[in-house]
Image (cartoon, rainbow, N blue to C red):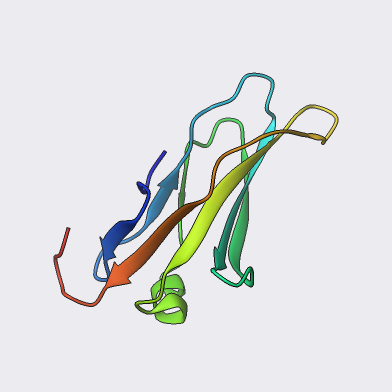
Length: 98
């Protein structure tokens, strides 16, 4: 999964969230929220899609604060079958920082 835990991402590059495929999962939900639990973005991904490119406004909304993200997997009947651990990230305002 990417970004890694406690990642500091460059503000001048797109953000792609990736996940591990889970057997029997038909859809996935990516959730990004602030550390108080307020939703920032969420997205539904189907089985054939292994990555999600966040909208460009995410960096403007988050700025340099820490947010956390995780992925929930759903099976054929629409029931949750797995969930990843939360991972945190923030954006650096320094161009090109890795």
